[in-house]
Length: 340
Image 1 (cartoon, rainbow, N blue to C red):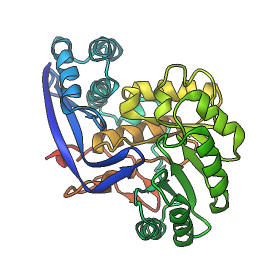
Image 2: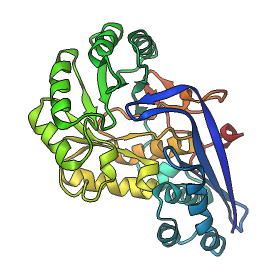
Image 3: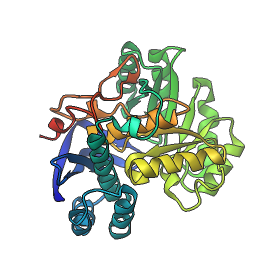
């Protein structure tokens, strides 16, 4: 099997701001697997937060194994690559390419390969990373006009109370407001902040603090629904319930198979489950949409992030707060043109 690995630094329309800093561009790595039968499977790794060459090196470590197979048996090929690559983002690229290849050979969409019964549109949230009141209010107004029922707002940036009051005023009473602190607070700070923000009406707060014990403490001491985000990758995170919900990401879970397994484990111990993006390109977003068809998330998913990229048409637009699973076999038609 012929293997092609390519790197792209995709520029954002505006800085993506969180309590951990701001991002102006996202490193994306694509993997193409050319089967002996002429069928091609394509995968992607979002290397957000990693050195540019780290995913590339990890995928190069898998090249020989991939070249010596024809993509089957899929689980064995993926396991061999996981042992070599280790990095979940690189494993995700292999996993997506193998699923895309298998589904294209079977002439079915990935969601059908996963055993899902239907490809219903996936409910998604909008996201505001604005650090000022006017910008946050504008994002909320735009989300309301576009038909979103949920808006995620980055917090831990300063003036959280003022920005959220502006968001609620612009969004109206019917929109759910989700917070994402990216672990910015200590336990006392998180408890105080969440209690102070209760009047705004909060759907949930992702990662108010870092660490499973700290998240469990915040969940016990506040009325807010608390979700694991970054801490979902910690050892034992899905073995016992620390809080209420868990946000799963294709890149962080090592691809489609890893996300399905994580969702199963999370629900077994009582978590509500939803999906989100690590500023993935269309292949990563498409993979999450196919997974959503199989697991049926419990709340809106953070997958409407493609409009954040500059100069690129969104092939998976949100309409009235939902994204349709892409048409066609494999991960879907018309996704690879986005990468240029």
